[in-house]
Image (cartoon, rainbow, N blue to C red; front, top):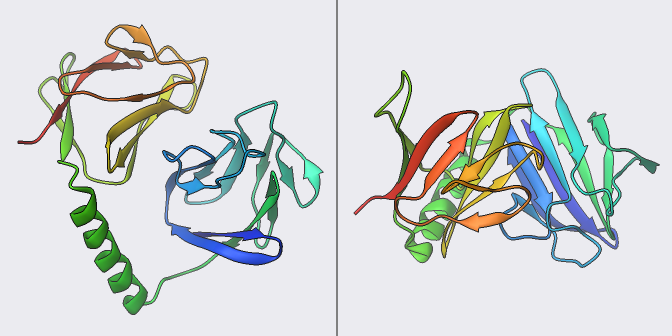
Length: 206
């Protein structure tokens, strides 16, 4: 499991643990690690967590990324690496497990968050191809779709709805036949999404 602890002026202000997937870092609320500071880009960096390694990538050329004091655009993360973003630093560490008590606390917190947000559940339905009709539930706070190099997006569940953003600004991802590019767009019921030539439709549970 990958642990990220965010520091500001040598004081820890946030700590998050992820077992796999994509972790987005930036100023926008749709990110996994939100750093509310103007020195941080809305979409600043992304960490891809695999079974064997973790890779961090810079997403905005105008907002630099530093690993252990060295400017970089992409790097493998190692134990206790320091990621510098704007005026904040993030310490990366690897943890083998989380205690059962911590898991229960997280589950309870997630239930409380769900109760406060009142955001209805939503799904994607495949409209074409061999998987036509397949339903893909959007149950997590962040859900990733697609593949590196051929189009990859993140759909975020927030208190005011579901939002989609691309991990690859040059990929041809279409929302209602319009290019997504580097925007973050709120999804509405029955919106269509084209990712890597797969057409899907977003719909809310009622």
